[in-house]
Amino acid sequence: MSIFCLGVNHKTAPVEIRERLAISEHSVPAHLGEICAIEGVDEAVVLSTCNRVEIYGAAADPAAALDRLVAYLESHFAVASGEVEFYRHADEAAAHHLFEVASGLDSMVLGETEIFGQVKKAYALAQENGRTARRMNKLFQQSFSVGKLVRSGTSIQQGSTSVGSAAVDLAEKIFGKLDHCRVMIIGAGEMSRTTAQSLLSRGARSIIVSNRSHDKAVELAAELKGEAVRFDDWESKLDHVDIIVSSTSAPHAVVQASAIRRVMERRRGHSLFLIDIAVPRDIEEEVNEIDNVYLYNIDQLQQIANEGKSRRERQIAVCRDLIAAFLREKGIEALAGVPDERGPKGPVGSDPGGKRSDTPGRPLPQP
Amino acid sequence: MDDLYLILATLAFLGGFVLAAVSWRRDEDRPHGLNIPIAITGLVFQSLFLQVRGEMHGRCPITNGAEVLVFVSWSIVIMYLALGRAFRLSLLGVFSMPIVFLFQLFAIIYLAVDDPGPRPPAHLDPWLELHAAMSLLAYGAFGLAGIAGVMYLVQDRQLKSHKPGRLFYSLPPIRYLATALVRLLAIGTILLSVGIVAAFFMEVKPTPLHLLVSGAVWLAYALLLAVHAWRRLPPKRLSLSSIGAFAFALATLSVL
Image 1 (cartoon, rainbow over the protein chains, first blue to last red):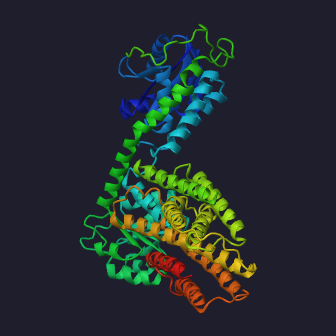
Image 2: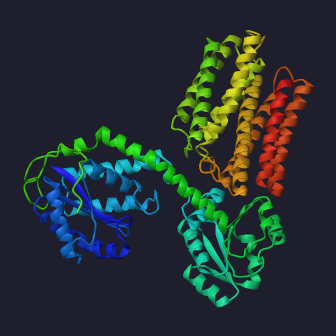
Image 3: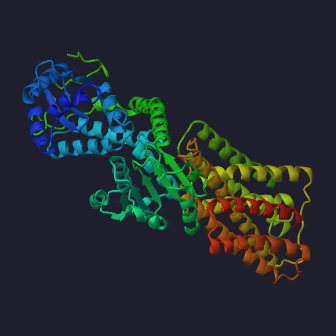
């Protein structure tokens, strides 16, 4: 009995294809039932996220089972035969793929953690519906162990990968937890909103929005559950904020170094973090020379994000070594040797052939 | 036997130092998992050294420069183990290792060149013991405050330069460092105050020079804390001051 994986992801299929194949959470149980009813397929887990649709399962003859599974997907999701190139993995290659997915190595944002929860959820759903048995149970339990191992033993999560996350990571390196931080947004543009939302999602306490057009400030403040202040009054609020995000379209500097110097005298040693995402820049460069004040512009944030991406990419080999070592130590042989615990085609499929693959990681014929 | 304990403790801290350097070279984001066990191992050997020396003298083992250095480094390690985690400063140990290792190394050289041997007191004075122990524990806290100050300056520099280096992701937020620094200064000042008060109850009164130097150290730290409480010193200035104050405190040990 072999384990297999069939799927598409953001690297192999455009969004137009992925959205056609996407399986919503409420319809997963029905699909799991149909997949397990396919001849030769035992056990199944469906992992469907915005970046991937994957089916994991067990089969005595994975090549034949996968052909039938592809036919099932093509007929159920209005995909012409041969229109989609599904990747197919068996045994060790399938386990390795799942371990990489759970570790965030196969994600669009390398090392992101959301996928770990999504894998857990997909497995829990299959388990609740009686579509997993020992092989899938063991495989997915191992994937959780590997995911944790990779995250705790490498720097794959470290470093920002976007301008927004770079800004938030910097804020956390200055203030620690952001739950005491107040944020001021100067200029109610899209970039401001995105950055403010990132800060709020990490726990920032409150938002003040100021914009030349007060109506826009009120609108954004309402959306962010913050407070709008008139553009002429924003300086008066500086004493009470920790983070300033500026993105106006003004052709000159809006935030002067002299104003920040005055504010810092009253802040009793509290740091101030300024994020200038405007072009032309809104904040005078000299501001960064003031003690306890940290100023970053859009290029500097972008550079940090680029370095973060490179940093994560450098960790891929380390992560893969960890996964390979895990597989060597207690991987596929243990999975393949797991005896069945169910009868044929119960709620969960059984192993009709009763044979196990003795060729871990063997390549499957690709369509 | 005491020599062996001292050497083993020094080797443990050297191991910690090397491990920290290797982790840093490998671009690892967090202190190595062996950091705490190594610090504990070093502390155990330090404690055994101090115990043997204490039994030899029949009093607190701070009768010569080597013992004082080991006692101060023992205080730094124990403060780190007791407070580092509470202050969310796991990396403090990594930064402490080089200083502790150097102190231990100087102590080995000192004893190898000239070990004055047993110096039992004519009469054991518990106030003297309390004075000495509290004062050196205070030096441990001041040492750790100085190290937190160095960490603050490193992180501040990285943030200001816009080029986060290898240590950036490992070092704690600067707000935590600033908070820990103030707390360590306060703990050290309280311990030193207890030590100085104990000196007034000693049977043999301290020499005027001893009093003057101890008072100067206490005054330096008390002033630093008072000015900070009154004017809220910027963390950068506080960090520089805590490093300078510890250098001054260390220099006074040669007089004491």
